[in-house]
Length: 87
Image 1: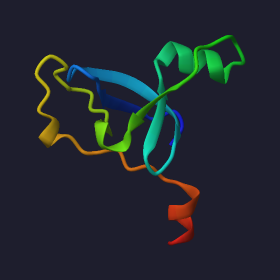
Image 2: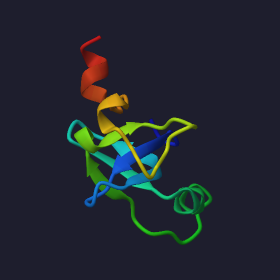
Image 3: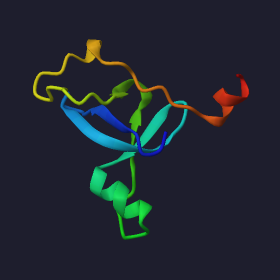
Image 4: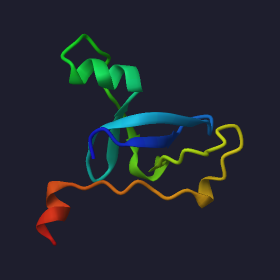
């Protein structure tokens, strides 16, 4: 859902705190918080970056970004138009 904070698994395994711009069944497009705000307010911004769905997790306030146990985080579940039609 647009605007939701998430944690993305970077190429080197680092935890990246980002904000969802758009999602699909295979990719979640995210921005940094400042770029998200710029885009929402019509200011110049960088384009969003797509992460594979399996590398995006629900953000938790007490996340230790230096020692992340990825197996204990809840995966982000994208809500797409096609999945809503099945409900």
